[in-house]
Length: 248
Ligand code: PXP
Image (cartoon, rainbow, N blue to C red; front, side, top):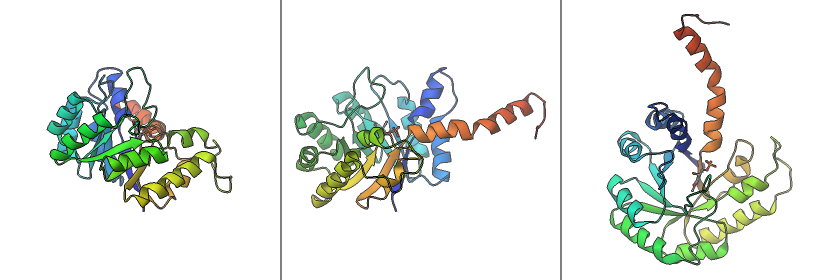
């Protein structure tokens, strides 16, 4: 059974839009865990656009499953992560002006900074995963760096996947084939395989059916759906708070 790590960054995005106290990512983590999430993921970005250091500290206390912290492989972030001590750290590339993580780490071309971060986090007893594109050279380089875990970037698959609600019977696109090949290669090297980025209720099944993939990290589409499926109740509760009672 494929595990689900729920990325709650965008709960913090809504809060930071007003620099308010709500919604609290810690409350979101508790709800996600009660609903069956196998882990909670947050990305502490260098520009602190959504999740804040204090959020991670409080999540460290509250999360009862596994806390996975996505982070850039910089000295500063490594120092902060060693202090916060999540169960897992996922190293990701980070660009200042990107809307979201754009691609995987290029460990094939520039392994040194990632190698240093892996060693420093490993010394602190933190498990390390590398977010990489589903390419043979990146998988080989990740394996050479000695990590036990990788997260394959599904962004290209997500963008290529047909938008129709039912993908059954549709020809497998090239991106899905790339991910399946990458899984076979990574499994051959003994790596634990996670995947994520851009996955939605419509396109997730073809990925969760790949037997080598043990866990998916999904954020935006879950939070987007939550904002809609929760809206009716939220409006009713506001009417109640206004003394207007419950309308049926
Ligand atoms: N995995 C990684 C490494 C990511 O950076 C992100 C986005 O923060 C995700 C998974 C989740 O992507 P999405 O929000 O599109 O589900």
